[in-house]
Each structure stands twice: as C-alpha cells, then as structure tokens.
Length: 592
Image (cartoon, rainbow, N blue to C red; front, side, top):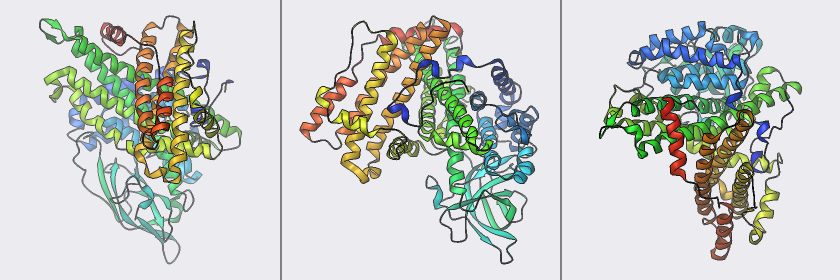
C-alpha cells in the first residue's frame, strides 16, 4: 500500500485529505479496464439481445445467462483464489459492478448471486463450507440467494420469526418460517437463511440447499420493474438442517446480515452509475436524432440543462464511489497486517465505512432516478413507449431506493452512525462542534484575496462542514436521547453530510485530474455547478434543523452563521451546463 492518508468512517467531517491521496477512475490500470470491457461485452452479446425474453420473464434463460457469466469468470471477480476466485481488489469489484449495473434485470440477479448470495459463505464459512459451496458458486454451477426479509421483518431485520430448534437427538436443527422478496429464489440452489435458534433473541445463519425436504418456493411475484429477476417467497416446513450447515457461530447471524448489507449498499452505489451512464447515452443519442421545429432537440437550452445535470450527478457519484473503494482496499490491507484472515479483513474493512456506504446508496439511487426520469422526458412520448430502453430503465430504477435498506433507513444511518462513531472516540467531532457553537459571533466566511481556484473550493467545503458541526452540537444538546425520534432533523443532518461528502469527492477528483492531465475546464464547470447548488442545499437543511429547536434570539445567531458559511461566489450555471452538454452532444455518449 502506498503511503496515503486514509480517514476513518465519518472522519471527513473534521478532517480532509489531499487530492493526491484519493483514487479516481482516471487511474484504472489496463487489467481493470480489460475486466470492465469483458463485462460490457457480455452485456452486448448475451443480455441486450435477450432483454424482452428475460423480462417475459424467463427464469431458465436468466439462469443460463448467469451460468455463462460463470464460465467467463465474471462471478469470481470478488472471490479469493483459494475458492476458485480471482482475488481482485475492491476497486476492481466496484468497476465490474458499475459495468454490470447497465444490465437491467440481469444486473439484479448477477449482483444478488455474487454479493449477498455468495459472500456470506465466502467470508463467514468454515473451510469445509467454503470448499463445498463457494467453489461452485464461483463458477455458476451453483446459484445463491440471501433470505433475511420476512412479512413482519423488513427494515427491522432482527424481528424475524423464522426459528430453528435443535432436534431431540442433537444431530440437526428443525427450521420453520417464511421469507419474502428473495432475489433469485426460483433458480437458486443455495440459500443463506437467517433464523433464531430456540429462544435466542439474536439471529443465526444457516446454509440451506433448495432440495432439502420442506423447502417450498412460491411462484414469482409480479413486479413493477426488474421483471426478469426471480423474486419470491420461500417457506420452511420442518426442514432438517445438518449441524455443520450453521454459518458462523450461533447468534452471529445479525452481525453477518448487517455486514453483508453494508457491502450490498456500497456495490449498489456502483451499480446505479452503470445504469445512469446507459440512460445518459440513450438520452443524448435520441436528442441528437429527434427534430422539432426543424432543428435537433439537442440544440435546445432546456434539453441541454437536463443532459448536463444528468452528467454532473453521475460524475459526482462516480467520484465518491471510487474514492471510498480505495479507502476500503487500504483498510483491508491494514486489517490483514494486524492478523485477520482475508475474509474477516475484507468484511471488517467494508463494514467500517457504514456512513459512506449509506451515502453512496442514497445518493446514487436518487441520482439514477433523476437521470432516468429526465431520460424519459427527453424522449417525450417515445419515452413512455416500451419500444425504448428508457421505459424499462425507468421501471427498473425505482427498486434501488427500496432494497439494500430503504433510503429512509439509510438516511438515518448516515447521521446516527457518524454521531455514534464520534461518541465512541474514533474521532473528535464534538470538541470542534462545541467550539464553533459557542463562538457564533466570530464566524466569517473566511474569504481571502487572490485565492486560488482549488483553495476557494476547499474553503467552501470546510465551511459546509462547519455548518454540519454547528447543527450537530445544537441538536444533540437540545434533543439528547430523544434525538432518535426526531427523524426529520436527522434527515436534515444526513442531507448535509451526504451532499458535502459527494461535493468534496468531486472537488478532489477534479483537482487530481487537472494535476495529471492539465486542462480540466469542463470538469471545473461540473464542480462549479455542484458546489454552487450544494451551498443552497446545505443552507436549507441547516436552517430546517436549527429552527426545529432554537428560540428567536438563538435562531437569529445560528441562521446568521449558516448564511455566512454557505456564501459562495455566483456562477453562470447556464453557460457552465451548456458547455457540459455540448461536450456530451459532441461525443454522442457519456465520455467524461
């Protein structure tokens, strides 16, 4: 690992890194680009020609396509070599996830198998379990799924009623219960099932084979989108589970479930980038072909605004995604050096960044919803027709704000986890926050003469962080233990934290990109627009937060400080967006 500064989860609120210390997509090496191209080629040859049949739905076809993925090694990218994997870095895994994300229903089946369907056994299984199951999951000989959600246990995962009782002779567990919304249910061979043993209050995990007597898989659900992915309920009626099929230790299931969900959130953040780029390409190609009033609609300012905003949101999400991915890679290396085995080092590295994982999930899924919604609008009436790819993309996009933890749950995780990490002493959040809060009258915007371009952006971002700290001190002091019930205020905090992390990631990427390649004017345009818009978002969320508790005099002081700290120079966003759109229109594809 090169000597670079790596922050703890949430620590970006009180610290920063230099541009040289972040990883950006422009640094992908030849092997990574080759893997990405292999994923893209697979979509072009095996998935796109069969989309209508896949979505009919045809689960046999979906299974056969997954098996072909395995034959090409695409299912083994994230797995260690001792179980037949390629042991690729987390950055590379995320790049593959991004490319596959443009695959509509196939991407859901693929990611469910490679992630939540395989990794619990790969990371938490004993050697016998890993060799028996993971080696075949790596090749596609076996397909996996993950069974956590129940009718009465969605976001509250530990509320599940599925139960496993040790048999009288102590040779096996007897499993009874019901799971729902199980991706890959009707063609998966291996199920990771979460259940409580006896009277335990905490979940355990089990490896279940679909052919075990008593496993009953219901017909697939009829869904709004991702129609080609198998989604069904699974019932367990007195299923005899061998003792050796417990995954991890008794009572460790809840931890396994949460760890795998963190991983799923992060990889979803990469998936939606691929879907966004596909939608942007569909948008600009249509805009460059469709004429109204005798001219191409790509010449219209309103269309350019949409195209530019699509590109800005996607580029920003991409910046944050690969910044975090490299941080995880480095933490995995640190964990291994401390004596952890590969599986534990990996899952601990991923789980550590719970704040950032939730940010990527929320921001990325909502950015995709914006991008695909505008893609339909750019297509006009044709966007509502099933003839066009954006119609499928629009329906498929909506699920991303629901699975891997709803965006409402993930917004709460962003603020709550950052605060709790600081309370545990992982970094000093409350000291700087209290100091700022007690010196509101001394706060200035910090503007200096002859400031360099990137120094100005760093000042803006530092000021946004100060706003967040002021809000954190105010609401934690006022609401104290009742804060957990103030979800609207927590959402205000999370919105500021999320937008600031994304903006900072974008700024670091643009600065590093310019140092590597020189001219970065079009990327400066993206950064200018994004930071300009972020200032307003931070200001609004901060005002909403402080006005929820502050009395008149204190409210005036707080709002005055917020106003100073969210001051940014005016930007001609119209012309900046036009330049971004013109680049997109000229290339007729997303090539930023």
